[in-house]
Amino acid sequence: MSEEVLEEKLGVIGWIVIVIGLILTLFPVFWIISTSIKPMGQWLTYPPVFIPEKIAVENYVNIFTGAALFTTFANVPVITHSIVDSAICSVFGTLFSIAIGILAAFGVSRHKLGGEFFPVFLLSARMAPPIAAVIPLLVLYSILGLVDTYQGLILAYACFTSPYSTWMIASFIDEVPVELEQSAQVDGLSTIESHFKVTLPLIKGGLVATSLFVFILNWSEFLLALCLTHGKIMTIPVQIRSFTVYSGILYGPQSAFGVIAIIPLIIFSLIIQKHLVRGLTFGAVKR
Amino acid sequence: MKTTRNWHQKFLDFIDNPKNRFLVLLGPIHVVLFLVLLFPFLLMIFLSLSGWEPGKISWWLAQFNYGIGFINVFTDARFIYSFLRTFLIVAPAVGVEFVFGLIGALLFSKTFRGKKLIATFFLIPMFFMPVVVGYNFWMIFQPRGPLNYIVGLMVGRDFELSWLSDRYAAIAALIIADVWQWTPFMFLLMTAGVLSLPENPIMAAKVLGASDWQIFRHIKLPMLKNIIVIALIIRLMEALKLFDMPFIMTGGGPGFHTETISIYAFVVSIVSGRLGYGSSLALIILIVFLLIIAPSVRPILRRR
Image 1 (spheres, rainbow over the protein chains, first blue to last red):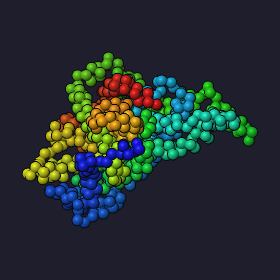
Image 2: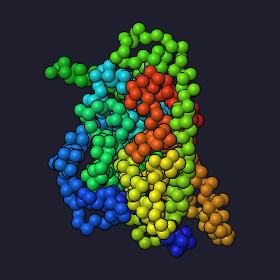
Image 3: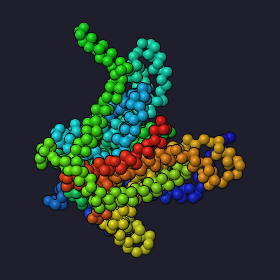
Image 4: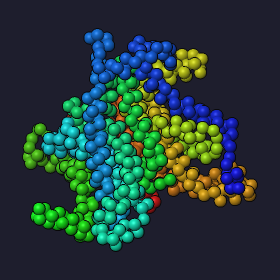
């Protein structure tokens, strides 16, 4: 009964709004894909080419093999190095962040450690602009010799995403009843053991979702990588930017690079779609 | 063998002792936060009060500058403008994102064919890397790019606005790009809110003959208030950090006309290497942000 009353059909106006929205949303997506498969010479033409007659696979090949496009004029940079660097920094940064996040989440969720101050502190750490932290961090890193190293970037990534991992994991832990742990403790497990042997296996799915979410943040991070590395290590966003700076004419290969860079993001986001809201709101909205 | 077991046992006892709980559970995150955030913060205070820059003189020879850096910040017109400009870009962008997101969520509370697939399409921009968004819109906004061509077809004559080199159009371009990327965020959160609305009051109102607008204005909107506040706060905070997209699209240009606060701080401290003055800037930025953040995190924490 209630279903029938509430289930409203979308009217014509609604459809018009949705179709316009879809066009506006998808046009930029279409444009980067279409540029990435345009052969050289069609990148800058006017009127612009929307759908190329022949698909230029070479854009995708060249960024892996490198090629001299205008003979001596511009080389297509090879991107393999930056993919490896991005993968190393994002994966280890994520693992590190999740590890400290799990511990802190148990502290916050199960023991109310840190009182009123810790949650505010953690949120402020995330909400403060990273540029304010990165300036002194650069000084600290140059003293410690961490500039342009994997360790340095991994540490920074772990720190800047730890509020997300802590809040998100804590919100998953909150959903597991304490009674389960208590009964395990009656059976002889210690408090910490009951955390790790009872609750942790139950939130496995949540941990995967949190890891992917944090990975997405690390993979697209730009400012920290830009400031804390000087070329020995180069993450994907930094290299995308260097494409523009050093060879602003390589529309095709650069778009191909952009498409490749966002593929893992889209796949991962679709996997964790159900938990996206939770991650984005620090667990405040669970859906 | 026996000693290892002893050590193992001692380790377990140590971990499980309620006295050590804070150390064990919150210790690691504090070490990381201290190393990456708090220690640099202290360093930042030192740098901004002494104007010391690495590589020039030894730090213990640096002299107290009586806070001259802070005075410079407040008389720095470029800083003040970049600050105001950030709000000028962020406020309309977040506002439009919110309205679009809410309209989307209300439309998606109805039933229609292909709903799930279309919803996924609508979320795609959010998954783009900001750097890629910047580069993509940089292409689209070229004077002889696709956007001007399409506008030209619509108005029936050549349309040649150089979006990214006109001081006002560049701001509009940044707002458009931001709206494109982050409307899905609002859409997602508002959908979560609309889905969690209880059915009974809405049904009752409908039976009593309330119009759609009345139901929205007097029933749905008040019940959505909490999630709207949370969504706006989070989006506003993230938006104020605006760096990647304008940095790629305009690099702060033409002139300084699209320079956001983050870009200016970056230019001062990383590009020109003035870390001392950069620290004063960063400290002021941090204080202003914390003044905005502190009261606004309450609604988020209350929900937990």
